[in-house]
Length: 265
Image (cartoon, helix red, strand yellow):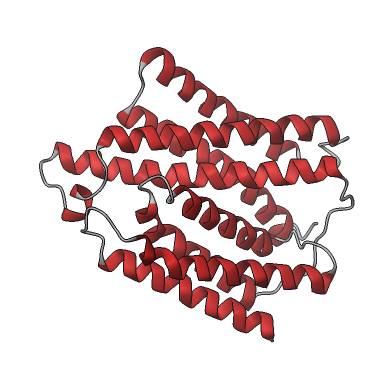
């Protein structure tokens, strides 16, 4: 019951911070205090996850529990990035998403699904996978915002919110920084998975591996294209979103099919 109340307070804090960002979205620069409620929401979210782990004596890797953990990490990475980069307005989309994921985890507790091994090799694979997905999640949201910004500026009908965003070059620079960091952790995830997971097919991981490798190729090609040919704008946006969709299918599409449709662990 205590963890449920903490989860509810976390949701309220996330939504409160998102509402403050939305209310002040037209300001060029925002006071950092405006995301303080999100820090509180994140802290309570992490406590909620910790209590669940202590109660079960292990992590629960079911679909909704994993989504909740990933959303908490996305919030953490965004808040840390906002300390040095003007990305806090992404919280308008990320904070409500984290609130929804946490709410689903509270309302629909799932059967405990744990991994058979907890050695450092598997831990490295899991941690790098979650960090990679979280970073590239932020990059995808950044790409969507960049697409809206570019479209409105080209049509000479920019909204006040768009005008208050950093310049297109700054937005693109931030996008590629996120992609580069995400690709680094995705590389670690793929290498550790290939080295430490014995039988991909027996563990129902073949499709996840194929999709993840495809996403890695897309993000790698995008960075090479940026460095070699100066790719930017719509090209960067399309490739970023395409790569993230493949990762989304790899990380959560497989869990959805296995757990919800096929009822397998």
